[in-house]
Structure formats: structure tokens, C-alpha cells
Length: 195
Image 1 (cartoon, one colour):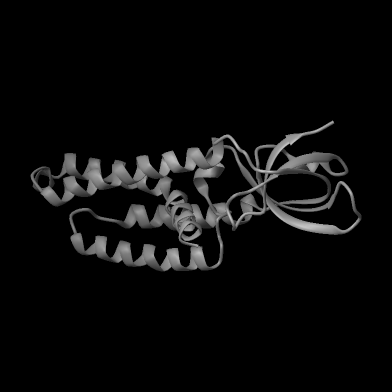
Image 2 (tube, rainbow, N blue to C red; image 1 turned 45 degrees about the vertical axis):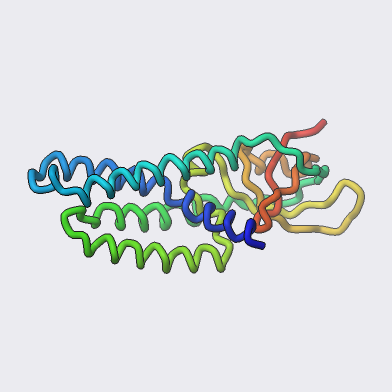
């Protein structure tokens, strides 16, 4: 249970990875153009902390996406596909874009407000399993799709959410192989197409 919760927290932190990069660039520009900030220890520690957070979440995000799998797979026939990536990406991206652009490193109180806003978003993100709203995965070429499918041996129709780099809209009626995810909050991750 603790590991599952940790993975959800990391999923949330990974989702904000592009925002950390925006904040790093913005803060460095502010430090370089504001003579008072050049000697301000808070601003330097803030940037160093953001760089560490950026690198750690990027590594975890890449591990999630590219880690070799030992999970079980099953063959399914795709019946219906809905690409949900665009439904949420712009809203989420604009949310942290606004947070990053409005943040001013010269005002430490804004850091407190930023942390409170991030905590509120984290509660909503984790409690509602909003793992599919992840700009880092989108930037790495992954799409989030909702599919209806039948298992290879059976006629019952199931529904699942999967991350994929493939365009599944073109594979309706075909059989593909999916792997069961170790992440309790995602259903399937596309593995490869079978013949």
C-alpha cells in the first residue's frame, strides 16, 4: 500500500516535470537580470532544488516509460478507441504554465502560495487517479486512450485505459498484445502488435 501511494506521488511529481524546467529557466533569467538576486542565497537554493526535482522526476518518468517489463501479457481484440490525450493536455499544461509564469523568485511568499496550490492539486490528482494527465509522457510521444475490447478467448466486452505510442484508431478489429501494468491505477500499457 505504501509503495502504491509512493508511485502515485511520483506520478504527480512527474506530471509537473515540464513546469520545473520552465521555473528553472525563468528563475535563472531573473537571477541574472536582477542584481539583488545574484547574492541572494534563497534564490540559488530554490534553483538548485528545482534542478534536482527536475532530474529526479525525469529519471522516474523515463524509467516508467522505458523500463523492461516482466509483467504478464494477454491478447485482446480492439473494438472501440477514444484518444483522450487532447481532452486534458492543454488545460493541465496551461495550469502549470500560468503557475510558472506568474511565480516571482524575488518574493519568497509566492513560494508558499505555489506549494499550497501544488498540495491542493496533488490531493485532487492522487485521489481521482488523474495519472493520464501527464505532459511529460505526452512530450515523450505517448497517448492516453480508452478502449473497448474482447479477450482472445471470450465474447464479453471490457473497457481499459492504456498508454501507447501507436495509433490504435487504425487497429480496430485487430488483435494486439498488452501487458498488465504494475501500477495499480493504470489498466494496460501497449506492448506490441501480434500477427
